Length: 102
Image (tube, rainbow, N blue to C red; front, side, top):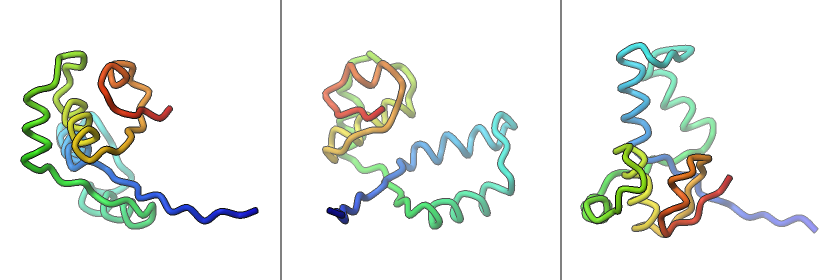
């Protein structure tokens, strides 16, 4: 039996912000410029960008400090508000009331 289940793949704008920072200061190299590479990869891999909303930020302010990285904390808050799982191997993610895959 073949099942056709479409999963929406989301990438936090916070992750793209972190990538842009690391690219900009030379801690991350890409095969092309950020402005060429990222949009192409989002399109090829059918990834939608999850923007930051006020409910995400409100939840962010209430998170316990199991994880101190501000970008990861934003992803956790977004996952909580949107009720979506996070793909991560980062152990502190599991301390929060979110589904963690991997």
